[in-house]
Amino acid sequence: MAIRFYILTFFLIPTICFSQVQDSILTTQIQVKDTLLDGSKQLIKPIEAVQDSMGVKKLLDNELATRIDQKWQEELYSNSLFDTIYKSVTELTFNEVEYPELPTDTLKARLKEIDARTPFNVEYNPALESVIKRYLKHRRKSLQKLISLSHFYFPLFEEELDKHNIPLEIKYLSIVESALKPRAKSPVGATGLWQFMFSTGKMYGLDVSSYVDERSDPVKSTEAASKYLAKLYEIFGDWDLALAAYNSGPGNVTKAIRRSGGYKNYWNIRHNLPRETAGYLPAFLANMYIFEYAEEHGFKTIKPNFLLKETDTVLVKSMITLDQVSEVTGTPVEELQFLNPSYKLDIVPVIKNENYYLRLPREVVGTFVNNEEKIYAFVKEELAKREKPLPQFFNATDRVRYRVRSGDYLGKIARRYGVRVSQIKRWNGMRSNNLSIGQRLTIYPRKPYTPPVAKTTTQPQKKIITKPLTGDVIIYTVKNGDSLWSISQKFSGVSIQNIREWNGISGSNLKPGMKLKISKG
Image (cartoon, rainbow, N blue to C red; front, side):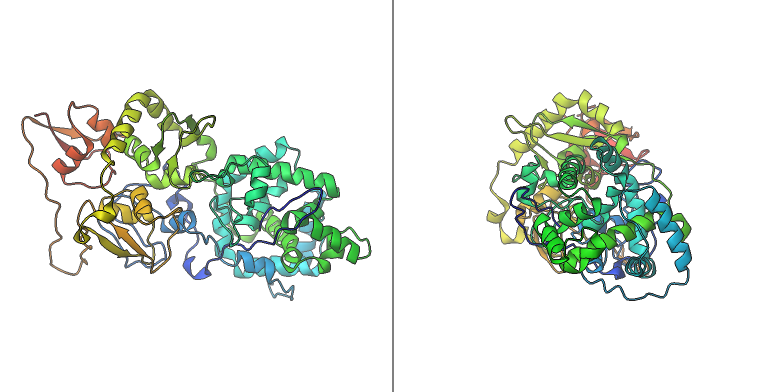
């Protein structure tokens, strides 16, 4: 679904498809305490193994030091977030659905309550009843995930909508638009939570370049969507019609009004709207009802402790990658990608006359600001090290051709081979984090990959060979908030790679209490 808009000409840009995913991957209801948004106020917890994101429990990677809820990885790094989002809009038949758990009289009473407190026409009709019952009967797992994820985004949406005098219920439009995926991209290019087309995004001040796509920025895109919807309401004077215009363009709505003989109620012109738009408002109202009465229908409404308000932004003064930020702060790169979805290549650029900000967990911001000079010096040193022949000119024996499997995502593959996400993307010409099963990746590993050995076998697992230490050796105990970079700064002449080699570790993940050997020689 895209935003398409020429106010004066009502020029219609073709309608947009939504991303889809099969419901088979959603095998269990979300457990809030185990998701990225859990009570630990960390998006990712360190452990020794990771469960497969597609629900295949046998796929475990014992080398990883990070526990990640794999359902969330599918949501964050796949371009297909939830099942039937597109089909639920374009293929609605409005046939009667048997769902005795919701009697018609109860539904009528609840819709009347919603109608009394919203400017939308939430009146009962058989078509709307059909959509609501179909969603409740066939899309419960998807809805449960959306309800949980909404607690992260809805406070931001409500604040911005209120600022522009937009009905707060518009927040449910983002469910229909993108299933709350900031990097959602439709087949024709509509992008972000609110699915802006390139030209319309530019019209409403959303910067799109090789490095940045502000259509994926939750704050800026919500502000732009609020302005756009306010303009549509100013034109039509009716929120139902404004939403229809948001979906199909104002021109299609005015044509439907003419073909209907001058009727202006959405339900009276619906049969003359494009097929997608005909199901668009019913889908929006159905989601509004289900979210408003989530508890009554048995959905979990526990709010996560990790909220957008618990993050803050830092103005970036020198180009930096999310991999580097992860290394110096100890913040998992997946968390940084989640908080900074507008940076297409996982790089925060510095461009003249532009200000770009890095969003971090609030407890990390102070550390970053207090060590800015050292951090940027480290980044500069890192960039200098990369001025080497490109990997494609290395010997073919240095290269690994990796086939993407069920449950893979870039962070997982990067840790497996001791490289960075940004390196995999650069080696393969990738502009996003999306992977597809069977896709081939070229990787130049820093360390050999040894597949995990099944527990039933007696074959010993290979160990990483550590390099000998020279001079005086001390034992450093990892503290909460430590990173390899921050530890290296405590000892003169010690680098991150030194610590890795002395202790036989890869990646950047540390656990409080871990003992590290440090050479002072």
